Image (cartoon, rainbow, N blue to C red; front, side):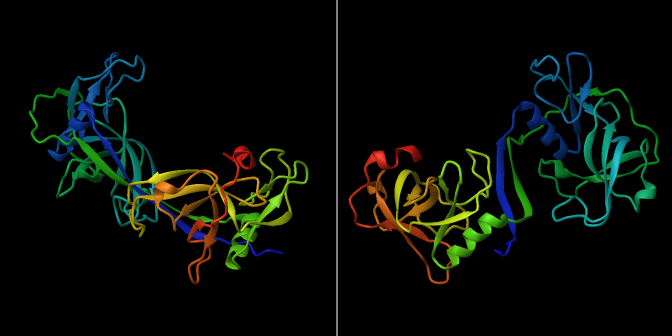
Length: 315
């Protein structure tokens, strides 16, 4: 029986977006220790503000200043903070309805323990020492025993300068991937410079990489079939933007390659040929780097190009 593999994986990228006038004002306000909301057509004040009324879809522009104090509407205790969370010690995630707002803002509450947190407790914003125009300008909330703030939002009359017009937020997902029986066998075969797929017992198609079931017939697959190593480029794209931490000069070609004997094309980089000479039907073979567990790239075999009819179903 094939050993089932597993490995920690990380998906990480910077998410960049531009800001409209409402979000720009909100984040610029946080930098200036001011919390802004927006009034909807029915008179409610939304914090954080949105650009369009969630009921009427009308554009919203009426900005109002609300208090930095508020009330916890619900909460959950976080006993083990993770990397890049607001606090490095156990804290509560809270929804806080700021005084003057009709909706709640999600953030962290610095509290000594879950017994110190309850729905209805009063809190206030603890501002970050250094503020740049981001939600992290609110370092967290903290318990507050002072006088209630005004519940009437004030018109926003301040004139900010140097507005925040865009944000870049790092997105990261850490998880453990278990490929399962079929893909574990596929990965094990690659260690021996072989490529194996699985044949559907009904339609007889061979899928590479194998999925453990036929996506067309919906039935389990178990019969292993060795394919390739040569194959045919069915379609491709030219990459002109260099990826972070990828030591490959641009431009380069990434292609769908139908290995001989397979009924599904897989992905692979094409090298050993000028990028502008790569074409559909080009016959290629894998190139393995020393000690690698998968092909580094595919290169031309020197054979005549495959006829379109031989791979048209895989385009």
